[in-house]
Image 1 (cartoon, rainbow, N blue to C red):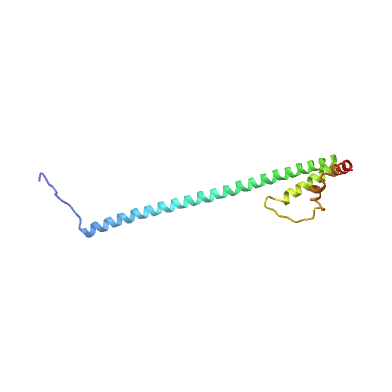
Image 2 (cartoon, rainbow, N blue to C red; image 1 turned 90 degrees about the vertical axis):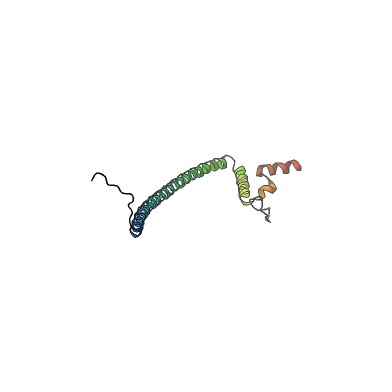
Length: 137
């Protein structure tokens, strides 16, 4: 025999369909495994990012609390110095600060003006009110 040739070689349709189905199932299994692995890695990355965010937020809160505490200490020193230098002016300014905190742009209040802190608006600074009375008489 010198030469042998095949013109066509095919599998029966049932065998071919089963082979293709098995190949498709193998590919689907590999795809599902890779998807599951990717989802697992994504979940780990998200969990790590959330943990890092919580840590940074906690650190920022601690730093903010330290800054606020320092500013309160500094404000207390300033208030103490102001009170020692001019007690009446300090009282007037603190009354005005209180008013500023109580009364806003949309606030409507009906209050007596002969009580603190509103007394400062009627009389003005204590030393100044005495001066006006002396000039006016």
